Length: 174
Image (cartoon, rainbow, N blue to C red; front, side, top):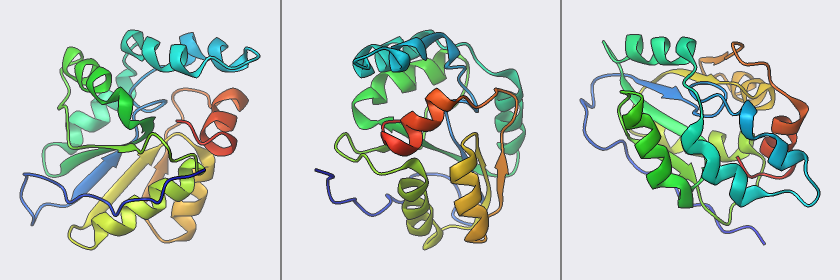
């Protein structure tokens, strides 16, 4: 059963006049390839997949883009990672010298495809802030957001695998 989605939280801090740049985490900033074997296993090992996220290498291209965006944007992370991984994700961001938030995560019981979860969050954020850019590695997310008119770009520096595509779109887990 999927939990009823909550409206997007407002962006805490920052300057309300500054536009917002949205960054996904997995596949944009974090290299998840070392833990994909947990999703190929039968049965899938979701908890191991998430608990090993603290060992993800940083993707330099994504980090460089995020640091550049900080010059004139408020940065918000919008990830399909479940809420229960918040502390691990914040520690990972801090370890790599990145801001730790604002960090918008998927509710633990929300298993909708990532594209729908992220669309809903963006609509909520846009009610109070200008969305200047969205950077995501999931082609399904990018296609839907682009069709909606959002300023979105596909991150291509980590090849998107079918395993991750299934996790994001069919399983609604990341």
